[in-house]
Length: 152
Picture 1: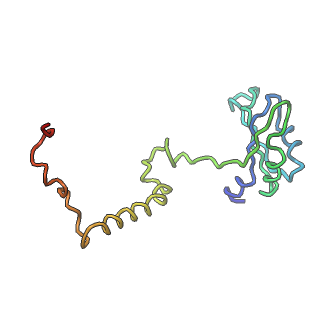
Picture 2: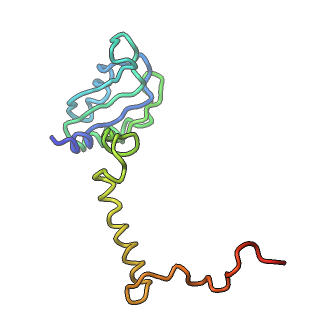
Picture 3: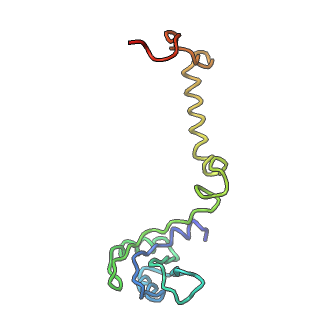
């Protein structure tokens, strides 16, 4: 299964009580379809005794099962807390967007999004000028032969 398909079949479960375990989540979500994996991130991954961070990811075999889980479990009560269940979002790449080590305009995604806009802007400027010549930057400044404020 591709990464994109995996994320479509994964749900985010937020608002979990600290007593919830991955087995509890497995039991709660198994009625909606075959589960591939339940991830319950710890606050500190190095210490296994630390409580989890209050959210989890449940990956299903089929994206339709994930949708059924969202429809049925969102805003339901689980261990005394109201759950927020939604479609999981794929994590952002460390090489893309703000916070990366590469300039935004050098990134693939940025070029794909903004290259077309730059071409349209260039075409509009060319169309606005006569015969394709650049507009005169001094046009409209004929009466401004004296520098400074206008006398009252």
